[in-house]
Length: 540
Ligand code: ACM
Ligand code: ZN
Image (cartoon, rainbow, N blue to C red):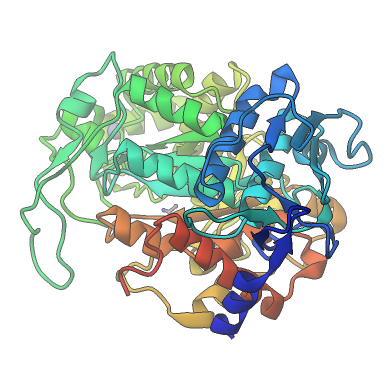
């Protein structure tokens, strides 16, 4: 099946009016567009005279298109006037009947022998159409080859407004070139959110100017655990992003229509911060940046006023760097043992009058109180907070009213976690561990179709929700945790091609979900990955 399809793709030929032959690309790619009609015999051949034509406000997008097409076309198309052209246009009335977020990203594309016209309702819509054009070109680079875009018409827009991918840079550090490659990959799959997990027990990666020890001390650890053995491997892991570098990533993503959402995980998963400033913990330490994985006992002391000041100051710097609509506060996996024994935390519980009630202990209520204080700081600057669902549920229980209803809940623990959050009146994100955690805890990846199906067959939207409740699902997120992912090669191996399945859950029409049709798109996506040098199968 794979070989036959690639031969079919490779043999599609168009003939120019000068009698030259051109290799035609294909409309087979993921995520599947909404409305598409193919027009045989209408392939647009990219000739020496072809240009990209655009109004002044789309020049940056035009240059990006030129750069992205260069490997397949063999040269950069000039951005200029010309009669044989790919025309980029803006039309704010396009998709006027769609939901607001859908209209923002919608685009209309026509490809005929005479020319290509890509219209977006906004510049972001144009960016989405650009990725479609790039995927429709033949894969790979060959000298002196003429290439053509297949003829057809597409009208396309996303199912969800929140289409995210999380990369854990706490357990392992990934340098800027890798992050830019990941952002290129997200853009190709029409994702719009890069969730950057920047702080962990095992490493604090973001420079905070007011607290330099966070990266001087917190960005280095002595080693990583070895499965089945005591202690760690003695191989140091380190790395940090300066604020300037973080801004560079924000700008790089923004040019591709992707928002960067920083996560500063709290009050658990903060051992690297505690190692840097021991007074942040309940016992005062000493602490070490963790060389073990899992859920650790030492967490932020939220009884001390100085801890709250610390987090406020960190968040202020974070919001200065990241203009994102959302700030992720974690809120997951925070054991309460230290708080139970801490005079500061117990004094705070007393002062607030928090009492164990129903399913919620006084310490769990203290966590909700703490997260709500941080949320106030964030909301005061017009941003919205996301937390993992254990901030809402305790470990497995439903608790009403905590945290604030403004908070977005990322349902990771079970497939129903996001449904429960929606029923409690929250907006929610679907990211269940069993389906959308792309990294296997033991470092093994499911092979073959089974591992694609695990993602693709997740019922999105959940069938049990009413139409009104479904509107509270903001979107879908895939997460890549890096306990066992130490380098770019393993990262790409975990990510691809499953991101294509994730992208279809996020973008495509749920009514047209069809696994066999999806497989034919995957085969072509794999050839596009290979052509770009993305090592999707190198670790097999
Ligand atoms: C999580 O996996 N602790 C969000
Ligand atoms: Zn404490």
